[in-house]
Length: 526
Image (cartoon, rainbow, N blue to C red; front, side):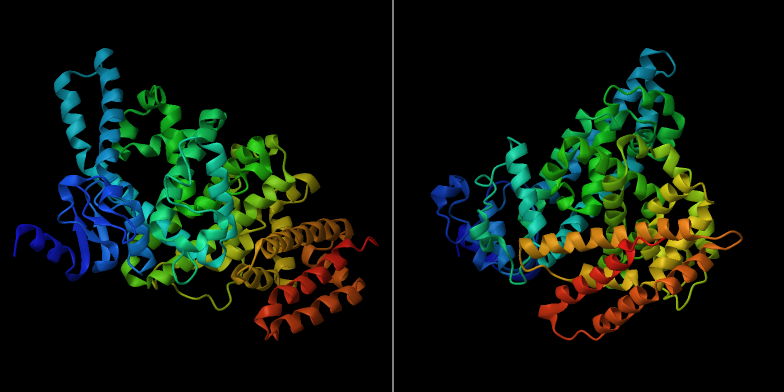
């Protein structure tokens, strides 16, 4: 066979993975012509995506596939991201090199180190930079996997994200990235209704660009808590030695904003920006701050990294479940904050000082039927056992400051209400429900807001109801006894909710139960 025939045959071999590290475009979509591709040199060796028989593609080179080829391969069940995702390590390494050299160059100019020390210090950072870069690649690919499952469950916020990027970022366009209008969105969906990975990779990149732009226009990178993100960009030993110089880095705002944007989008997904226009820019900045604060307040990063370090001990789907559980709690807490707090109340130093108190409080709560996750990681088990109750932690802090009751009292009261009224079970069912259209998506979000209101409002009522020398738990029991008729309706509705059998009516069943909660909450005879 000729050389061209051999290359085409190699490309069509049945294998686990095709790694492309060469120059030129080797794969096009079956509906594209070679004229569409424009790479004349590789025309004789090029194949169609439909002819590939590999399970996955890793793009070490640039433009080895056309974007339509990636989409076609993904729609056929193949695993593929983007060249910009798979080979981002080179650019990322260069960024680190430049930013390290800027810091060290400033020290040389001040006469604090000589040229030999500069080079030696730079060399010592190599292994740590490589480690950081590899983790970045890991997080990006994981983010695409998580968003793929999110989009299969609820496509609406992804469509909203696409619309926002198209309206707000001049560099983003549907045509350029082969993203059709909503009526033809099925062209980029896999068999299970999820957006294909190449499209999600594009949304990942541009959502980060958009979020970084908003951060740089705001004052968030200048706040004291933002220093942590600036310092964490650099290798740990480097930031410990040169903290003062890093804090004076000419690109410190850009670095901090980049780290924040990466952290948020990699964890919360591209749909984090889906409500930007609804919130307005000022409200969206509050959302960003709220997410970063809650993430630190609950200690989520430490738990995520424990999950990452034990990747081969749990099935991937179980890992995704754990990561989604974290994000659901953060999303709920953030939603409460932006609906109930003013900008000056979303104050990082004030809220973060409760972190130790929260940890102490949770350690005192009895744990029933705690399910071990890693076996020897009791801190992780402890975290996930209490995670559903953390949804109302910020509300407990604010209620404590408004009512002048002890924080542990308000927190225990909220936890007791959550348990007594089956709030976690209702929230879990609502989280699992897959909206069939935009209307159901809106109803689902409204029900979440109603549940949040019911718990917060009921907590305030019980505090007002509390008698002298009565504990919060006793006050709650007294309240429920005095409003037994409403409480009984909630319990009866919950029993019907547990016995639900028709999936088509599940949202309706949840809505009826939440309605009974609201009726009890809105009763004014306190």
